Amino acid sequence: MLSERRLPKNVFVFSLPINKARFLEGNTIKSESQTLQGIDWRLECFYHKDQNAMEVALVMAKPLADLYTMEMSHSLILDNGQDKTVLVEEKQPEIKSFSNKVTVSAVDMSLCAFENDILTLGYSIRVYRMKKIDFQNSSKIADATVSLDDGVVLYLSKAVLSIHSPVLERLLVSPCFEEKPAIALPGIQMAPLLVVLYHVYGMEIRLDNLPTELLRVAMEVAHRLEIAVSLRRFEVFLEALPAAERILYFDVADRFEMVAVVHRIIEDSGKEEIRRLFEQFDDSISYNSMHMMLHHLIEIL
Image 1 (cartoon, one colour):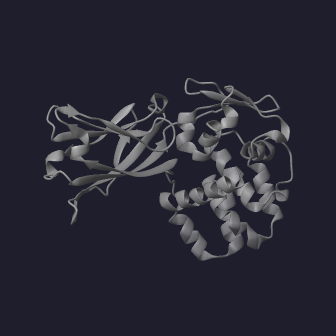
Image 2 (cartoon, rainbow, N blue to C red):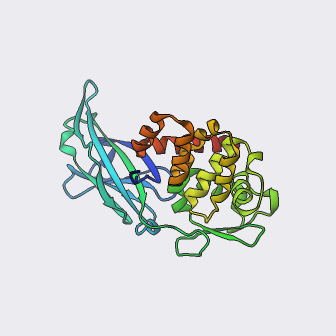
Image 3 (tube, rainbow, N blue to C red):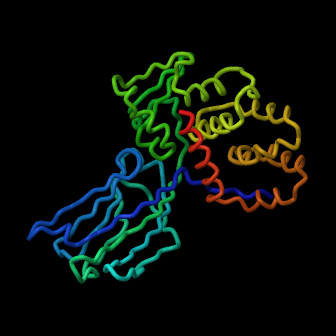
């Protein structure tokens, strides 16, 4: 029986070096923020009345609070200029719900015995969606719209896209979108990414006329956007391929949870190792596959 897998929408890895002297000027306590990835993602570190106790918080946009959860692991390393000592290494992720501000760790700054000692906080955060997001219905999270030439309007949120797709988030904040909040993208003058999404899923065209990698990227991004798509054309496309080539689309069918198609691909391949691979599929493999596709998408934009 095929097991159900919980796939992260994004994985954020970052670190924050902390030097005690940088945060204290006489009796004044300074705070600092560090921009991470996307919109309103930043680390804030600040002191309480006890100057040896510092708190680090992950701050994100308010609309995300009811949509996502995250698994977070962190490490704490002390560097005194000669040696590095691992003080904390939490390998088992801690499951948290998003709120506008989540305290990720409290740091005992008395560990920095000398002025030049540096503490480095490292974080790995996996983000999971709690509920389906319908981008074709206006909602409180929308801060931009994209109008297609068939009348379909997508309501997009920069904060949400910062998690679902850094590429799409970057498109929204690019100079060509700054003049007006409603973006008209008629016909083939659309941004290349939206051309693919619209023409593959909004019109009848021959999928086998598209470059293979472009098709794979389009399907991945469309799936991540939760746009209602017809997968029947993908099945027809696979049927037209020689059996030996269908295995190239194994990860795409798996990502769409097309169980029957996956079994057919496995049967056509006749490779027992592919069946074992599918049974062992985990988040890291799927995420790496998605990551490579997005890198290809960046190249073609």
